[in-house]
Image 1 (spheres, one colour):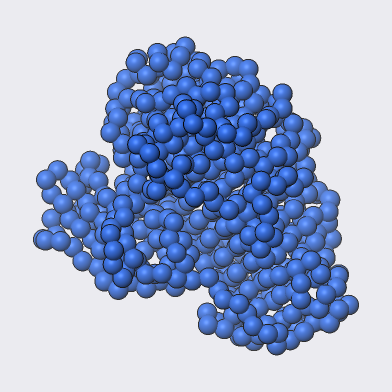
Image 2 (cartoon, one colour):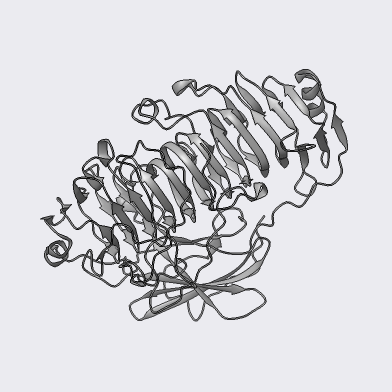
Length: 586
């Protein structure tokens, strides 16, 4: 739920802007903001954001709102508006927010009070018990008779089931809970299809059990599914999935239509894909989504995943707004770690750690944005780290660390190769690290337009060829590129020069050295936390980005995902209490 106490403006209403509102339902650690534009207003207008606890205290600067570029958006046309996200908040807490829009000498401030979503509490004692060795039909009967507030608990045992359906709803204050007596000791096993299938059901919690699928990949059919949301009953609302282990499934948690306020956290998911040429150089992984949650107000955090195609995703045909993916630990993914394709606005992907992916993030395309991708780690990327296809606008890549070696297709011969698949307008790439230890050149950024843009304060290895073929030229070195590219207009930064304040990094600038194979097919099984060593070129040479580098120590923030002064996240399933430095799941 969302609570809005008051909105106001300072002085007369001088600018053509509407009321500041929360964009969709509340989420646990974010406030998504939306400010409509009601009349002609130049793109030079800027919207700064500050927030603080509603009880008072110093104002904290967040990332500015993004002006959606309607004319540069492919697909469904968004309305003219500002939008953006405040992150790093506390669940179930009240905050005051103020947004100040400035255009020339005119300014106007809008204010809002909002409450982040509280996480569901513990579910109490069992009200119904499913006995060990119960049949699938008996279990289905128990599900069909569930009432608001029921806690249905499985006794320890292995249950052979067949497409169990959940079609009864709880209420926001009295959800239905389905859980195991113990997470490892209760196994629901379906080798032929969907283990749990949500129909027209709301306010349900699934927790503390194991779901086991076919343990055999079915190719692009992706027939073995852990939890499925039937799109004929969409939108399912306020479903919580926590403390669940998924074993041997093609797809983990997948929705096909609109969903609202899904919470997916502290789960561990094992897919059926493996890291070899047969899988990652073909289409075998393409439909094998780990967690796919299209809709509004959904949050996916602190999950551990391995063996899927796109580990995290939204999907087409749904208005995807206010969806957040954070602190997840992806051990191996045969396609994209995050497929942001078809996202609309206020989508975030941050503080995630990924080993062994083919692409870190796909943006193919988004419908206006903003999309924020920041403080992510990607070790061993087989293709290009960022796929920015189609006519595209409104995505911002900040403080990400990518370390890769010889790859395949778009990842062969270049550190990052972005083909000319459509113009890129109004986007940002700042404070990132890209280490390429393969053979070839550094960067091929082929799309045209590239204006306005923020493309500064990044670290690269090695120094080499950089191509901005359709927006400025091709050059042999970073220094040559920086000096000869034509001027551009910034969005949130100040520089009119791409690559300004970029640095050439050492091949391994980290305290703990990151060891890769000769090529990407060597699966990395050591978990890395790439903290920069003192004196490394990216150390303390970034730029301050409100909402992204808050809390850094020193004169300037570090480039990359691990920023000195900021706490290191706990990645992955916290309920398993796995140490961040452990050997990876395989």
